[in-house]
Length: 231
Image (cartoon, rainbow, N blue to C red; front, side, top):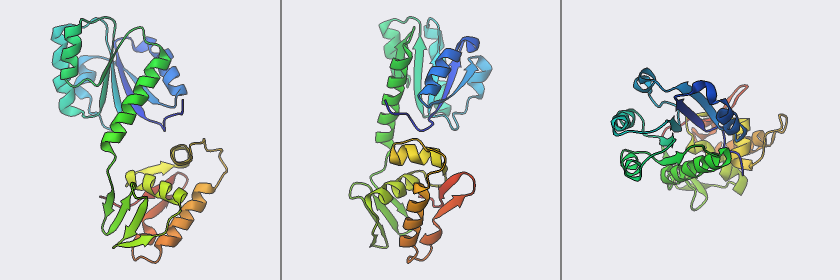
């Protein structure tokens, strides 16, 4: 399967010392996994910032443990998965009703876990991807594959539009070349290719005729590019 572009996962587990095989397996799929011991303090201090998927690794489950999920959901609106040794069907129902997105019984095959994570991320992306984006007169419509400023179309090629749309979706976030090559071109960055820079230069040239748009895509020296506009 294709790799995911650095999705961030927090794994809260009762066995932090034994989670390394799972972390390594997910890292091979290009997931960025942080493993933290699941304690009351860890759950209380969890903010969810910069975490796309929270995985709770548990042993046997009880009704008393259901109380942690409303607390988690009060702080975190991202994806939530539970890994568990054994659980009755009614408790599974209650977990889903408390906001759990997926539940897997242990032992979990690493390939199956990675596939389920990718499926969750795809569904989440489909729900969150906007029909179009507006930035102070600039409209980007992925359905029509059209970018226009104040109604006047910006004549982007197909690849230029793909890159422009991806940058716009992640406005105010610096995207490095590794990420852009995987997300836009579907390949790994080899460290010296400059195709992204060439496409950025072409996009900038086409936007230069519009006042204020020529500085919309900023170069972050030594890192990548930033779409410097807010919705």
